[in-house]
Amino acid sequence: MANSGAVGGSGHAERVFRVQRAFTQLGGRAHGPGALARAADLDDSTVYRILQSGVHQGIFVREGRGLYRLGSAAPQLGLKALAHSPAPEAAHALLEALRRATGGWPSSICWRRSAARTGSASTWPSATPI
Image (cartoon, rainbow, N blue to C red; front, top):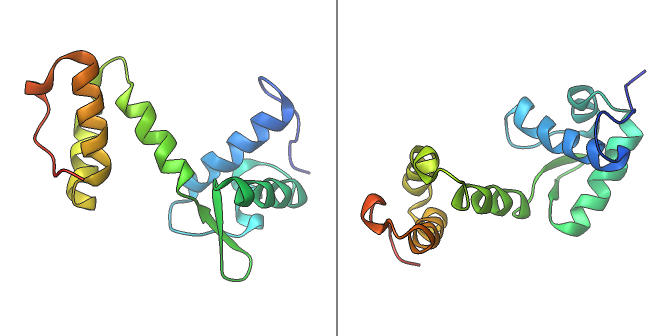
């Protein structure tokens, strides 16, 4: 039986975060509730309910029959976290790779905001404007 007990914080919130992390642990584009449940060490029904709720919030997207992927809200959260990192230099390599992979749009937002916040615009590479 899967572990459904809370490790820290509220039990439900902790399970939601475990499902989100399961996507990164599994890699690939889309996964079914069963694979996510095994990776998150949760019951299939718990994962299914979390996925259904997350679809309505934009955290997850249903793709085809029984497959889910992370929705657009997930990378937006990650980009915001990187942009407000206490050490922007640590995030530079990740943002540069993202800029190259996407043609510049997400990381240009982060670089402009971070440079404005830190006053270190000269340390950030130029980015394609939106």
